[in-house]
Image (cartoon, rainbow, N blue to C red; front, side, top):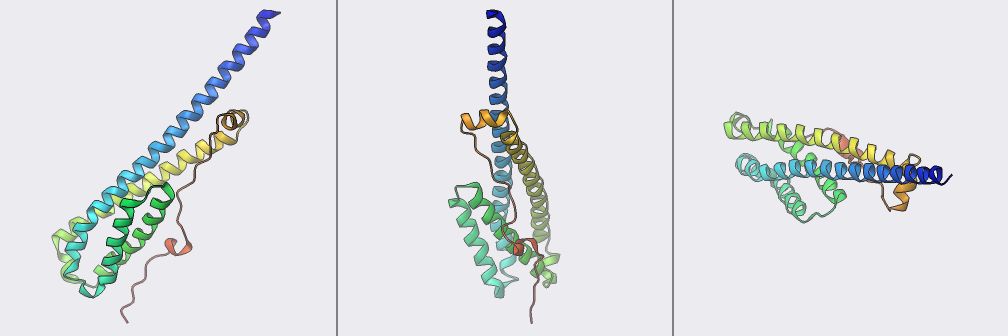
Length: 183
């Protein structure tokens, strides 16, 4: 009889340990996924000064756009949380779309090899950011589901695991294409 009780207790302890370890693993994957986004966003912000310098001479009357990029880059350095960085990322995506759209009106700029290379680097970085966001959201979703499923929800609440936030566009405006009007 004691062996049966001892075996049941051992199975419960092993189950708790396994569930706890799986929650820790998923939480670490979420952190890693965010780190990958952070790396790509930093890469984008590192490319921006070169893009601005290349574009400055051609877009003298677009100073407000260039000033906004510089402001966002400064804010990025001060951002601490995932949400703050996500918000800045969404804003910067809109401004970069504007720069690329405005560049269509400057044939000399479009023909510049330096600008073309920077544009290609940014395009590649944007693709990596997009993939990293998707990977992050997939990781967060797996983690959050595990937090809600029984019996792991009991272990999660016992050890104070909390749900993570998905990376998403801040507003309907961030989801729209940029329209440039020179009239």
